[in-house]
Image 1 (tube, one colour):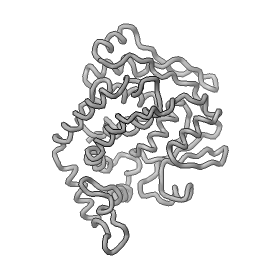
Image 2 (cartoon, one colour; image 1 turned 90 degrees about the vertical axis):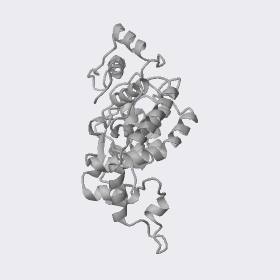
Image 3 (cartoon, rainbow, N blue to C red; image 1 turned 180 degrees about the horizontal axis):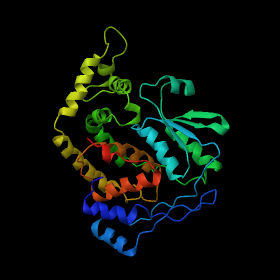
Length: 311
């Protein structure tokens, strides 16, 4: 990961600032606390609001681990992975191929992700927010209410909507072009994604069609051409727009530890899960506070970023 000096110092000062916590089976958690010198350095280099980092609870390790079935790029799947990581619940991650219809259909009756399974209960369920609520309310997975409820902020939602077309244009071709994401390891998985995910300026009905002779959708060869051309274009104008939008978001984020005043909340679960895919785009210029926010929650939730495979 290539970071500027300011971002590097900020990350060093804050990324591992967690309180000590014993695991359920008695093992000590690995912890670190920033030194006064590091803290002063961070404060001198950033306008980020001073805020206490989230204190993680004990490590939860069940005899039979829960399983989450996901696509790596999917923000709804990332919501669940991030929440489980923050709550310190050990779990297995099963990455589905993007063309795998049989596995999710066998589990819940249709092709969808995320899917969550608790083997000891013979429970299988879907929908990211329902999954997170289930884990939060189950005392076997630690104290309830560790992640605060959503605040209902409309400014961040408006920002997300404002970059939707921009991010689709930049992210979608890169997901499949890397060939490194687990759901796209095979050609069939990459083609399944391209078949079903339109690129701007096309809308879903004209890309996918509706199954009728009148609207069969775009031919697959043309879809592949559109993705190839999107990757071949100079991204500089779009990067300029994205960098400007990230500066706007940096002003909306409360601190490098959580985006809304009052502590880590479902606002963060949703926002960070959506921002993660931006790291697959090479040469993005992250404002210092926002970059520290990305790094801190990545470490806290044990969900890696894409910087090393960015295109």
